[in-house]
Length: 119
Image (cartoon, rainbow, N blue to C red):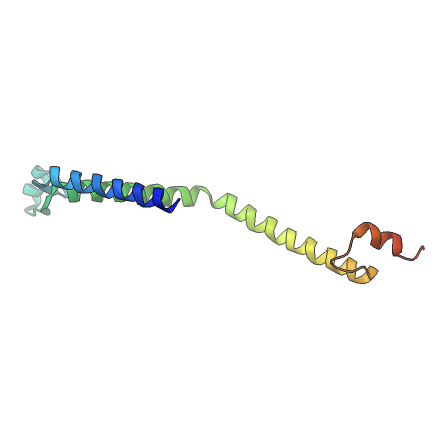
């Protein structure tokens, strides 16, 4: 299984290297349209290789997607915590009932009921 995982990541790395080599030309990334930059007399732009822009865009998209999914699943996480608390309370209650009845913790419940004194 580790061999498949290493092979997969080797292929992904090779693809990233190929994309980087194929897109090494420089591009200008502008923060605002040129007419607005001329009007305000500021020019917030930077020259970067195209593969960095591509990888940054993919990374930003993944980050936004993960954040969106985390926010969307908030309700599910709250419900899971509430159910976990409920399960823990029920386990504690069962342990208390077993302690009161005197049945062994690891024993068979049916045998414990048969061995229990009749009321």
